[in-house]
Length: 250
Image (cartoon, rainbow, N blue to C red; front, side, top):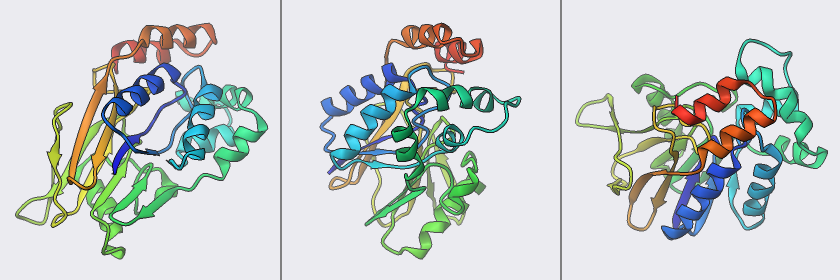
C-alpha cells in the first residue's frame, strides 16, 4: 500500500492535477485528502468534483476549517479566509456543500491516524507548528496502541516529528524526494504541506507518500503552473494577496 497524502488544496485545481499525476507516477495505490479542499483559490467546484471522484474510488477525505467556513460563511473579517468564504460558498453546488459538511474530522485505520489539524482536538483547528503542539497531537494516539503514524496538514509546511533518546519530540525538515525510514518501534507525526498554497518560500506544490509495507515516508515538491492559478484568482476578483502568495510561496 502506497498512500498519497494531500492536504490544503485550497481550490487550486492546477496544483491538485499536478500532484495527482506525480503521485500516480510514484505508484500511489491509495489516497487520503486531509482537508481544506476549498478556500482562497479560484476553482473550488472543480477541486471538489475531483476529490469526490477519488472518494468514490475509496479515498479517505477529511474536513478542514475552510470547508466549515464555506458551508456556513462567517461575517467578512480581516482574515483572507473570512473575506473569501462567502464567494466560495456561492461557487459550490448545494450537493457539494452537503457532501463537505458530512466529511469526518478524523480517520483511524490500523497504524494510521489522519486529521486536518491537531488530533487531540480536531474541531479546534489548532496549528501543529512546534514540538509542544506536535506532542499534544501525537499523544492523542496513545489511546490507540496500534497507531504509529499521525498525519496532518493545516500549517502549510512539511515537517516530521519523532521521539529521540529523550522525552521531547525532535523536528526534522525533510528533503524532497528522499525516502525516510519510519520504523514502527517509534511513533511519528508529520505535517505534509500544502498542495495549493505553500507558505515556505517555495511555490511548488507539496504532498507526501507513505509506503506502509516498506515503512518509508517521502515528501515531494511538484512544479505546476502557478501563474495560471494566480491568473484565475485575479480573474475571479479575489484579493490580490492570494495570487501573489502562489507566485512567491509565501
